[in-house]
Length: 79
Image 1: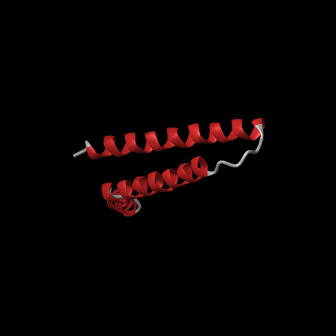
Image 2 (image 1 turned 30 degrees about the vertical axis):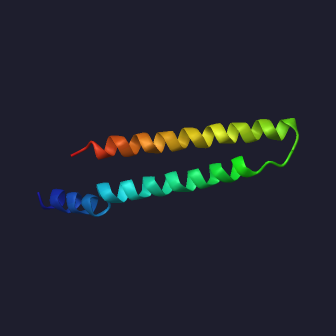
């Protein structure tokens, strides 16, 4: 049984706390929001192909922000 306890202890030492996970998610939300704002503010005309790429990037970042917020809500409901 000693090896089981050692294995559990090792696992617990590498497990993030709820607070650490939430902190990381809030950081990712902040980074993505800043990036999204920078992309939206940039109004240079790069032509239709790059505009399509820009819109795709906006959509993708917006999806990630919603996903991270959903994870925050889910984790906050865990007691």
